[in-house]
Image 1 (cartoon, rainbow, N blue to C red):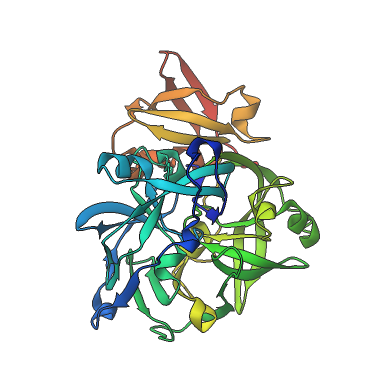
Image 2: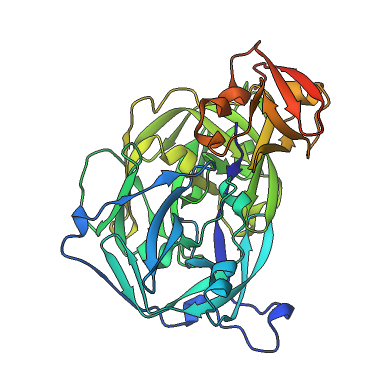
Length: 401
């Protein structure tokens, strides 16, 4: 079972000392550029794959050059990777600071000539700049750009998770039918927001965040308010741009998103003072939840539309090993040992390195291979794990949450 990754980034004014003496100008104060949809935009589907952290990864162009991007409605202003900007020798000016998962990050700004994403072209404007670590996608391969609300918020996004493609449409289009839920752009944080009903609690605003690989995340207060007796819990780790967060996690019997009643939903409860509290949100609706549906996000029309994919209400894949793992070249690194799981009972520790699973090495395509399912395998199975120091361990899988 892989980690969940989170790429939410709320940009705000402010000047970190590292960027002095030039005064920082936040993204919202800069020229936005001019965007237009082509007449054939409805036919301009963008193919994507899902990263190991459940984010939508695709190719687009900036200033005529191809790069790899992630669709991230939890980002207020699109973010270019600092390493990409430096490699391309783009002049970076001071941009202030941002609130991100795990803390705050310094940001910069680069001017762009044009961006092309499917049927959308933006001329002029620019991009925020920040470090985009590979771990935030759950992958060994980093991405170059986070496509945020500033590029997509005026349009409808039709995400066909089943076919691994999305497109940008004019607001008001309804290309398919489904359950409707409220959706808007928050006035202060400038990200997509909706709401959920969990147990006895109506939680809002919930950031609708395609860059969050988790399913549903709520604040610690929201979890208490929901009053969910009998839900077994453990712990899990998530990674954002500014670091890691350990949350409580459980599978709830059902929750509602507008007209939609979803069953067997994985929910994370952040620690007190977590990211959601810091930005004044009740939590997040992430790609781990959205990928069970065909999704239309149309904040200008005030709606999100969800049409279930086959198996949408099936119980989610859950760890039976109690290990959450990061993928590195030719090995797996233990990033978190889940509370109450078999790995915790067997004395596993964060930082342990695995190089073999049942005698098979960790190959380049590990994340997409059947071998990667071992950590969420059948309870009672005994897995032989070859450690990178040459030792060997056995781990008996079990259902523990």
